[in-house]
Length: 459
Image (cartoon, rainbow, N blue to C red; front, side, top):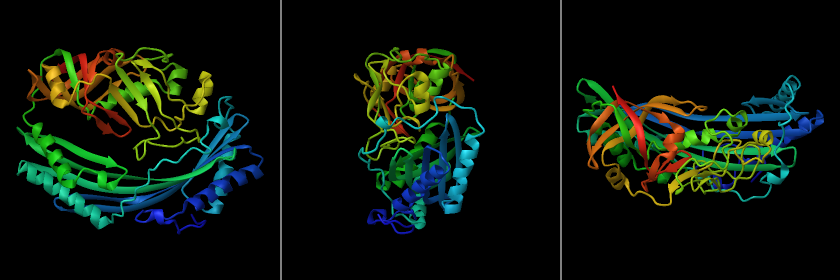
């Protein structure tokens, strides 16, 4: 790496980034130096550049094409238990100093918190390996537009006049950062994120139904092909036509792999440090509690190469590591930042930015989608959540949903205007099995989840 802006190493070929890692490191170090001249001992600084392009097409023509880029600087100062944080979208030297001054002024005006402060040095990623996350697409705006048009055309061909495409799009972005603390920690990194999507609309007896599909990856070439993407969005939309409500039902429900990650999210929210400390969770004192059947594990893998939620360290510099969150149905890990860990008398788990890549799996998986429908036999195959909520303290669960009614392991007809309800603790304990039809939704991988009993009411 060279040490000035605008010239980066050969690994940046095809990326959207304009600033070298060395320049970002220099900015971060200047923050530390300026804060020290002011008598501040504990400083955390994060510098970032994000750049890329997004294209949307409608009616077989370009609707919008946006080339975007931004810088951000975040400065956190800890002064005798007082925390001050300030931000800037400029990396100019004068703005950097002003941001440091602002953070210090804020810290002087807040009440102290004995849990506030930098991460423990023993936990920090001073010399842990980097994780490969950087895979620039080298794709210009014309290339993004062409692929979006291909996705739209594929959806229209699959629909054969029975639908229209509301939007198809492609996006490709790169990110570079530097993270530094006054303990001598300084690391830089780069990552890429690419996405494609298609949204379709079809008639349904005077009403309209819509559905969509999207693909996300750090490797552009690993995205679903535009043709497959558009066709899948179209088929999902057409399959929802002629939906009907169902009568009240209290029985098994199969939650499709594409939406099952929401259950993982509810569980992880209950295991967060703030929720545990404030006991604002349906799982207080969660460690050691049985929350799932004994054949089910939830594993966090933040060190996965090119994972969508991978990181060698969190926003405090704490090293990531592979660990079990739930092992054999029993909670064995929480998601703690340095502050929440101190409040609980524990150590940070490197979760200042949330959780890393999570995989929910069964040691005795229920098979692919067809086999999971066979295991369901009769009941609701839930493929879409349309709103609702979960009470984080009581666990009361109520969500609007749609999907398909299944008889004798076969799809009978689409259903809509449903409400599924229960208590999240009972829902988790009532998991019969998890399918091998694994789907990745952001940070979470899981197969479809068969629930023993859920209350379903129709419209």
